[in-house]
Image (tube, rainbow, N blue to C red):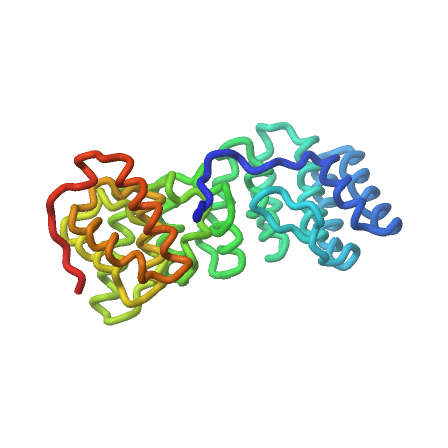
Length: 310
């Protein structure tokens, strides 16, 4: 599999399970410090005191615990010890907050965090939210000018594709393209394919061509072939046979992920001829497409039609 399909939620850590993983990494003094901080949050008489305790403890986590990578990582994640501890503190607070109060409280906490703490928060939105209730945090992050913070939300993060509305999701993709981020790292992108997303990405391609600027290679992943105009289909398929291996890779990966059933017959013929000369990391994509086309034998795979390669 060349691009991880988003079909199941990421594994969730319970607070106790997360602390168990941290305990393996921490020396006795560090373990005690983290447990005391967690107990203080749980023992506070008011939510205000609990939030203040969390803010103080979270701010000290990096200095107290260090930045070593956590040994056990849930699928699709990469947490450092200090980041995992901050997540643990947030999960601990969540356990004592009424569900109806959690979204507003979490947004308030997020706005008081520094950038490193905000990065932990947006990476953990899928842990901290049951549904879309933390979208205000995601929306603020889409609008941030901090590249690291935006990337923490946009890349390798399950939350946007699951819970962002269409308008905000399109804005996230547009910003990712403008920042030259790799759309292959947008978790579950094939599941958010739409005519609007396809048009957005093709419009961005045309803008780059008109300005005589380079086209971001991964932008093809934002397009579904069947949603393109005839001219757009010509442009897309022409890049399958581009001199750029990056454009070859991402156009083929886009067809693998998003469907190639409506590609014309002469495309399949040219692909069969060209596959043998493609780079080793690209040829498996071409072979997969050709294999699927041969087995499906549907008329939609072999429509007559023409496309330009220049």
